[in-house]
Length: 531
Image 1: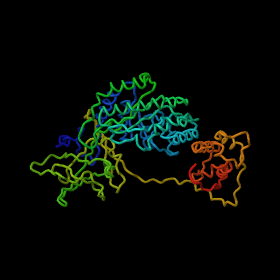
Image 2: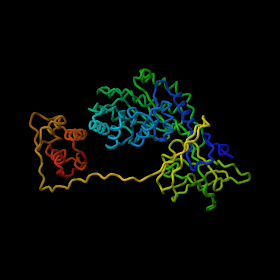
Image 3: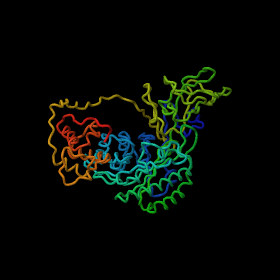
Image 4: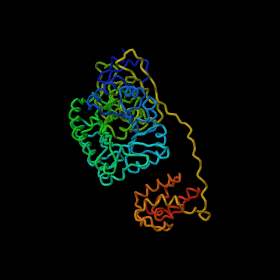
């Protein structure tokens, strides 16, 4: 009997798996299209929708979503390349993430990315510096961490201490910190408050709060010449995960949300602001099913134990860290009449760790080694959120089919991990003894860069012993000054030199600049704290 006829309560319909590899993630493109149609139909017209690649970057799913008209939101070099590979222009991507290295930014800029989300004043300055070095100009969404969490969140991302975004109160208190830079400017706001909200009512409450915050922040920034013309309201659209269930009905969302937008952003219907949303799990979560095999069953200390070929290396790696609820598979092999059900079975994977446990007390039908089982609704945060490198097991195959096109052959592929040589950087210069140091004289360019940061400076000449703190240099300006010096001289000052002693006097700061220019170590002694 084909496995297609054996599925019971396992989410989207599966193709005939005869001859196909197991374990495997099975994705239905028809369900992806249906989810996209359902979500765009539930959202106001003239708004945009980003797909968050972190949910599932499989190229077949990306192609389907791009064909549906979805935009792409990425947060890594790998996701950037995956999006570009299926045809999204790099200039249309939104590059997010609470921390980005200089190398990541350089790579993104060189590939044509021009739209970023930034999470702090430092991140804005860092992006400006990177864009300047590549001779480009970029637009940014300023991500906001609101002062209160939204109710009903599956995972709080705002209203708590978080790497995501700038606190609303901080932006309102110091809006000038987010003014235009030479190469990076704030063009909008990013207000993703939480994930997997439970109902349309919860979503509306979140969006109402986000819109109110967006108005306050936009007004504060406008006083400093910043026009927040894009409002990314995030998402949080719910979908079941690793359990039977359907996509949430969002039919009651569109009308009330349009009323909220009309009140908070009257120009939104003509693109002022341009309103957009994001989703990952809603668009692909119900399109995926993990099919795996029972390896062993036994009794241990009075309990049934079921060992599967898949564990936290295939699904729910975070559940091994107690971050997700128990995962209970569904039997695909036909029931055996008269066989006793398992009422409190421990369901585990094959890994050599007690953390490889999906469920401690699961109710299952009678299973035997060789039986096929399935975990539905695993199209999002399944394989790509698991511990795939742990213990070196093979990754599950990925099978893509289209239930709306039965004649189309399934597409089968498998990810593999490979070790490749890593280029070694050029060794650092041999340190020069302090006795042999020869500092360059403080030049006019240094003085010209430094003076705009000294608000209390008079007409008196700037001397090496000039007290920078006394002349008005504060800690926030010290960071901006650092970037200005590095850009002016094309150098990079070492992190260990960024301390109170370095920024105490003009002479101390010049010693570090001189050292970088001559390839010698700096002379400033460590201070009591960072500048």
